[in-house]
Amino acid sequence: MIHADRTTSSEEGYITPRSPFDFSKSLDFLGEFPPMREDHKIEDQSLTRAVSFGGQAVVFKIRSTGLIKNPRLKYTLYSERPLTAGIRDAVLDRIGFFLSLSDDLEPFYRVGYGDVDFAPVLQKYYGLHHVKFITPFECASWAILSQRYPMGAAQKVKQTIMEKFGTGLEFEHRVYRAFPEASRLARATVDQLMPLVKNKRKVDFLLGVASAFSEIDERFLRTAKYDEVESWLSKINGIGEWSSKLIMIRGLGRMEKLAIEKRLLKAASTIYGHGTPLPQARFDQIAEKYGPWKGYWAYYLRASSSMSSVK
Image 1 (cartoon, one colour):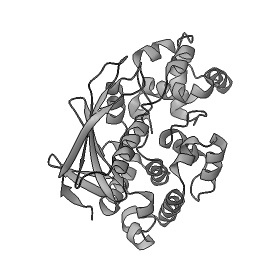
Image 2 (cartoon, one colour):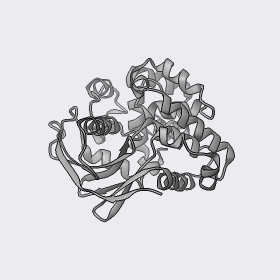
Image 3 (cartoon, helix red, strand yellow):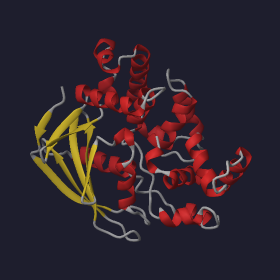
Image 4 (cartoon, helix red, strand yellow):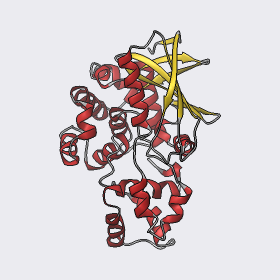
């Protein structure tokens, strides 16, 4: 079962996101993002959730103390025992990765403001950085769990896996749970996972994903050429084209290519076709104008349609 211990150590500091950054818009997205809705607490414009490093649970709480054009986040880290410098730096790196704090949006905005139909969307979501799954492995696991399965049911399975194999920490009368690290889940057995997942095929896929991610350096996934990472993902049993695109975008923030699906096409039709279905050729033509920022373009389109529709 999950470890639920009271915090005995804390430390705080500040993070400076790349301007413009609107933390309230990140919170709005998280509040409506089903795969992670139960993993955190959003209150008084602050975010609290847990991460795990080497089996040690760390709860972080962050809130904005700056402005959109001059952003600053105050963080407090809580743990059962004092944090080493290495784990502290890893947690801060994870926060920055999770909220895409270092993304430079200005090149994207320069293209977007020249797009008459899209400019109002930019104005509405100005300062929204890409919110990802907190780890690529959690995203890959979600891709397996949610394949041909209702989102609510997949979320419940994800929670039971966190309770059984993850780490947790009690803070302010709540146990915050972190999704298990790949190395931990890779040691699980089929017999342990079957009562939770109740699907042998998904269990096999999940164990394969855990094994693959436990052996890869995340720096490779973040920085290698897009095609190299996509090729690596394609070799994992259970990761098809849709899952690969989901991991590249939602798990790694690789925005160079699109995961085209009905929700995105519907959102584009609303903005560019004013409700009339947008031909695929026209969609492709518009997307290409955004070059390496087409993923951000799609992210804002989905947000403008309905954040609750984003999977």
